[in-house]
Image 1 (cartoon, helix red, strand yellow):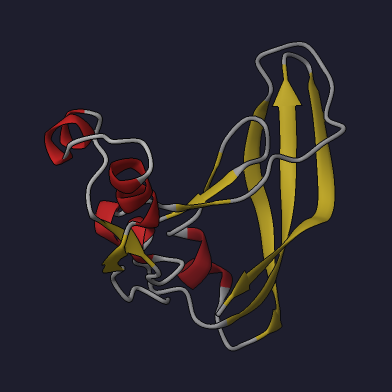
Image 2 (cartoon, one colour):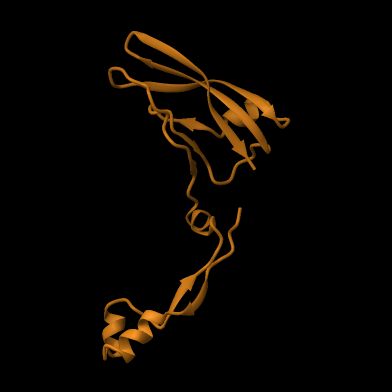
Length: 136
């Protein structure tokens, strides 16, 4: 994860508003415009700061009478040395097939194929190898 914090840089808009438009520093502060702003920072800085979990996209093409329940049927290792037990305890899946993985986990690095089971009242359907989970 790239969690380098952002750094302060001069805000060119602030100085433009003072010099060209005649605003005072107090007026700009009341509008939330300051002489410096945050820039840069790692792509995972906010995720790490707020402990935001990793979330996948939802699966498409699943239709049926609500509520539709999704569950993980099988996890296969494509690359890596993990067993299903090591991976499944960190993954949760919602009814739309969207996965959630905590920010901090102990899933070994590798690629995993996930088979889901979708069910509603009276029907069940397995969707084999519908997601590839890549842990770096």
